[in-house]
Amino acid sequence: MKLVYFAWVRERIGVGEEDVTPPVGIVTIADLVAWLTGRSDGHAAAFADPARLRAAVDQAFVAMDAPIAGAREVAIFPPVTGG
Image (tube, rainbow, N blue to C red; front, side):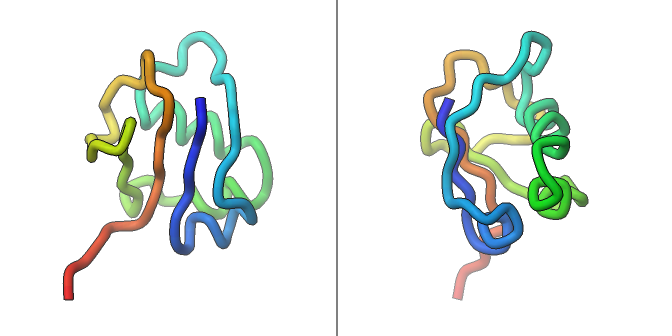
């Protein structure tokens, strides 16, 4: 699965995207974020407060409890504001 990061999430992790294969048992966006926290200090910093994150699966906004089964791309980003 391709992960794409935006804004300060990308800055803290140090990359804009990466390919991962989550282990069995990682079934939601929230599970994925929790698992990713252990990948590096940058991931831990970016995902320290999951309530500040938003996500999209295959370019459609989803809640953090959304399933990731079959997803080709998951994007994680801070809340988006209009202007």
